[in-house]
Length: 157
Image 1 (cartoon, rainbow, N blue to C red):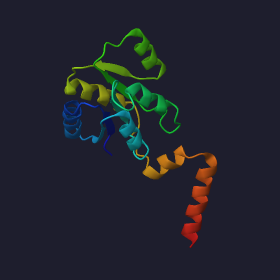
Image 2: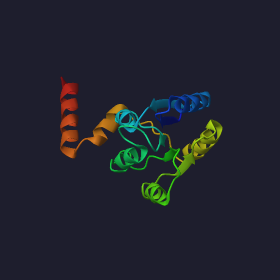
Image 3: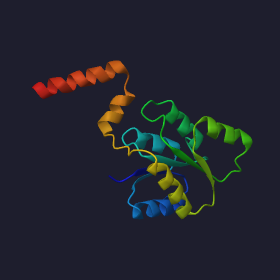
């Protein structure tokens, strides 16, 4: 099974260069141009690692990671952060608090990013959860039970 990566950055050339590098290494790659788009993808597809820019429109990288950490099905997703800004102490502390595994300053080498990601994914099992299991994990317990009951009734019919 191919390892999965979600690349999130509002700079198309950065996403495209990294996407090509990862595809050539056999990764299943999805891309997003901001944190909101990445969040939508994550509702249906769970990667093995998320690489996200820090500063983006709509939802920045730190906001995206906060959402991940508040969501049981994604709270331990490995994250690398890209940043063009000098990562001041307050941001380093926030990154540490959110469990971000590393901060990579721009400009960066796609090859170096690939090496960092490969090191991370070698240490964990692949996320091959189906869309249904992610959706069920996201539901409150009562809704998940109702969904299972509905599925069972459909199967009997």
